[in-house]
Length: 207
Image 1 (cartoon, one colour):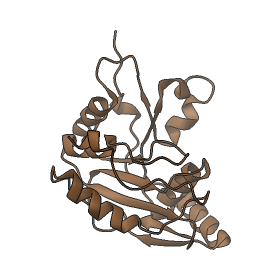
Image 2 (image 1 turned 90 degrees about the vertical axis):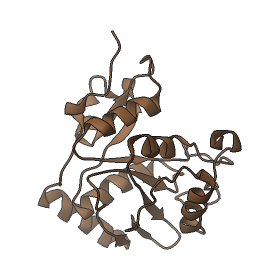
Image 3 (image 1 turned 30 degrees about the horizontal axis):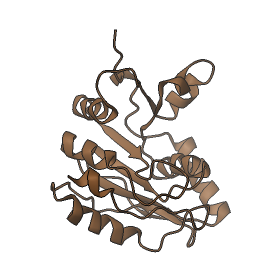
Image 4 (image 1 turned 180 degrees about the vertical axis):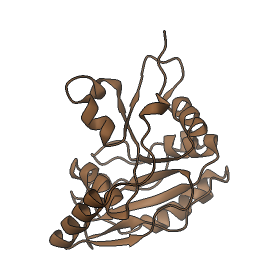
């Protein structure tokens, strides 16, 4: 029997005042400035860039708490087994089942279509190491579910983080859409300098 993303495990809505105040205090203590605002759409894909370290995961969780909204993120199903599965689900994790006959993009598109509210955070780089291009999954998911792409950022060079207020709506012209996305992230640095991947897609994935 194939497994699917469980909609009941999707975290939606806003976070409580305790977590919000905690995150705001943390960012104040480490000297970071928050920018942008909460996405204005009930469902969207938020890309988190740059991604060069495991630190980025916790920074994104704190950033969402700072703004007061819940996020979802994807992980392999093994991550959600006992004894830590409950913890990652509480943080908004969604297990992806590799044995499912549908691929990851199809699973996520289905989850976005079924959800009433969903802020799905993805790393288009797909790895913490440097690579020549991004993976196209984030674009395919947003395009397939007809939802906007918001640009989340963690710039360790300037200690600024946030979500750009204006989203990118997939037009089907990937090259043009990626040009806009790439221009926004120009010059930003990750936790590990020199490992930031170029904001461009593999030419084969654009066909």
